[in-house]
Length: 146
Image 1 (tube, rainbow, N blue to C red):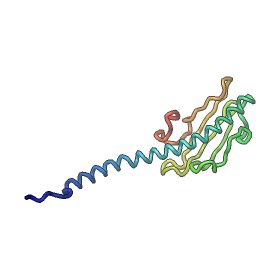
Image 2 (image 1 turned 90 degrees about the horizontal axis):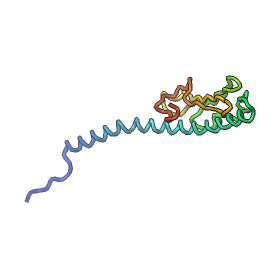
Image 3 (image 1 turned 90 degrees about the vertical axis):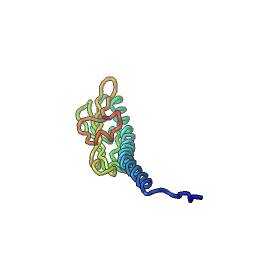
Image 4 (image 1 turned 120 degrees about the vertical axis):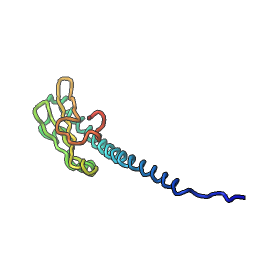
């Protein structure tokens, strides 16, 4: 009787290691992009409350508020671990901007910011999320902001 071979050959092990290496090289960057997008989605959720407050103020008074407190925008960066600053500015009675400076995301994205511009009219307030001045790379933004 012949003795049966047991175990794997060196070439088989090398092929398995190469396949795992290729999969890891693709999966790790994709996972990092996914986590950054999830964190930015949290900031977008936080921004939706500010946009709602600003829109309600505009509809009830007929103009944008002169300050963040008046419009109901929470400018505390403690709202999220991914925000280092929140600023509100009014361009004129029909236009205002809220801007979120991002932090704790990934190198190359920290320090960038999302900017939301609201323009009021008789139909309410229209919002632009990827307006001039947003510095977040588009691959991290949700589809409606690109």
